Length: 97
Figure 1 (cartoon, rainbow, N blue to C red):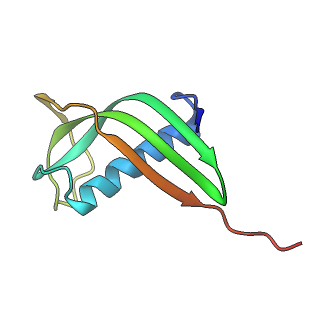
Figure 2 (cartoon, rainbow, N blue to C red):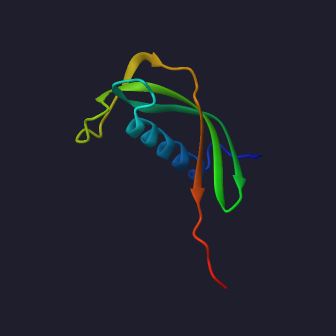
């Protein structure tokens, strides 16, 4: 694993993807959609794709997790959680030569 720039567009997109997947799975344990507060650390490893290891601060929003119509969710005060450590793999399509 190598350290990644937490401000890079790639890492920001990976973090947003991870939060959306966390909401879909229901693994956050909250009935509210999660909001990304901060990317605290990021590492990545390139294999046959990219393995991301992200440390994020999340908080509950005011939108219910199953509400797909509301995209203007706001952060709920005092709802910031302990940072979860998330890992996921993004496969890169193989190119034939």
